[in-house]
Length: 308
Length: 275
Image: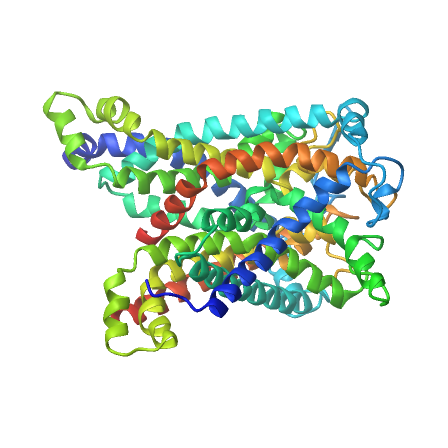
């Protein structure tokens, strides 16, 4: 009793101030999450979830099916998981790769003493400044069969492309949109990182006769490591979960070929017959993958830090 | 700085001009298309003969745009106020105090930011329909707090870390309790940080698609992200309306964004790098 008393006296303020957020998280995230995990072990769908029609309450009638949903997904039985997963991985890799290389390249160019620097920066940052859904619709207009891309192709005597109606061109199209939207964030982050690298390091390297490439590899990249680590982690998590670009540009089509795991789970949950249980299982699978990735990534980076 | 050769200089500017063109073109094209009035004029990319503000008057007078705009504002401001209010105290607690459960709290704030919508959307939907909060402002605001609150608390922690601890000690000497120190001394100093997280939580709510699309079911409750979709569907392509409303949404958003973006990035990367 005395121990509780004493720690209460000592930590009272900390607990009281952290409590509202912890409470909100437990109610709004913890409870739904637990409920979602539970749903994933049942066969809940639109027909048996229980609902009200007028004044009549229809009780839920779904029942437990154990790990059947997970088995269905992971064994490839549902026919979507592995194809969607491999596209999700390609999507994530290509996007983050392009974001980082283009963002880093532009940041290095902007970091030099050049004329109109502020003007370039303003224009390059613009894709980040407008809301994502507006950008998605803007690109849909460009990709339209009667849009400006096809007008240009036709002007040069080529056939127009039905950009969003064929799997390959639709995939290229959504990646282009997302790269366009994501580069400014990376560019600005790297610009911030570049400014923290002391210029003496570059002068010393130059004195030692290092070439531009050597300066980039030996001074710039190591100096950017902390920023690089953060934005890579954030970039992978964000891109993996990137809902709005795919949903608004192609709605996962044609025939689900551009669906990533998140949009696929959404379609399962809310399109046609609502398969709540299967969607919940997908959600748990996605979250587990992200947590494993984040943990492994942080560990490996920590190890590198020790070696360096 | 050494002198660049003229060739290198031209290459540098050429690259930046090309990149800027790619960045600006889609937006400029939308703005241009929004001025093309008349049925199907948008489908003639090379024809600029009918330029006027007809689409804008149509959007404002003949559609629910103004209602959607108001809904988006109500929901975004609600999210912002609620999230910043409850996140500030928590951010301060984890910045200044070490208490049992501190690590767990930090971990919670980080992990929740990783939650994909797919995990929460079904249970939250079931929960909200049980509480009869589907298709209501308050329901969507609560849902947005799941992402806004941990992010705000995380970022505010980073900001409070930059305020010297001597301020707190001075407050203690003057006989203020920790709440008093926080409320009277630290919070006023943290105004820039508060502004940034407020803005950020406003933006997340403003641009969110998945939850709004599921939770808001009648046109009088649609947010902009949901409402705009109804302009272009499988059955119709009202690109005139779409582009005009895009411009009306993008201009205030872009201006606000450009004003605060420097702080936004600093907070984002410093907060997570320190974690």
